[in-house]
Length: 297
Image (cartoon, rainbow, N blue to C red):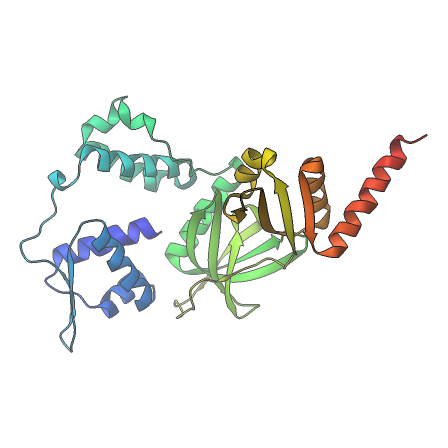
């Protein structure tokens, strides 16, 4: 998990005079490019990391800098505490231990107060909890896993994976790793995984390209135009896909199922127009005819 890694890198920098990107890459089992991005994030958080080039180069904390409890404000502690609490249900004892340690460091967090105003919902459904803990252990132990996977169109396949990262994004838990069948890096949504089996076979991390392809099939990209009267719902449903053009809102949205695309478009009634593709317009008209036939005697 990235939060663990960032904290770990910071601890390494505090305990050593200088450490190289190669050493950190080996220590945390990620690429050198990832280490450079992590160092930049640590810098942005206010911890000054100095880099040195050359054969004896590497990273070290700025001379005279040290990290204490006083370096963090109560608000800083609150954000970290609530972030961990939001993950506690998914990861169990490991996160609970971190939460208790943080509470010991700053006892005010354990009392009911302002920290409860900030909530991170990073938990998992009941059906996902056991899978997530199993996957997390497999990532830590570097063990190959077998599982079944159902993509957005309902197609199911059996997979073998060298699991690398488990993370949360836009409301869902994902697992990425090296798929032995596809011989490439792949990303899987945990809610679509089943029959997860952790094998006794271990693996050594590979140098993989970032930004893995999501293990999904390509769908239909629809160009939709909405009336401004539908703005509140459109903005909420399509988020980053909205283009506000003054008199209307354009949305470019990929739908993996045609039936779902038609149902969404119909739900907006006369407040939406399909600009493309043409065959989606034809399917919409056919569906409208079927609806009419149901009510016309």
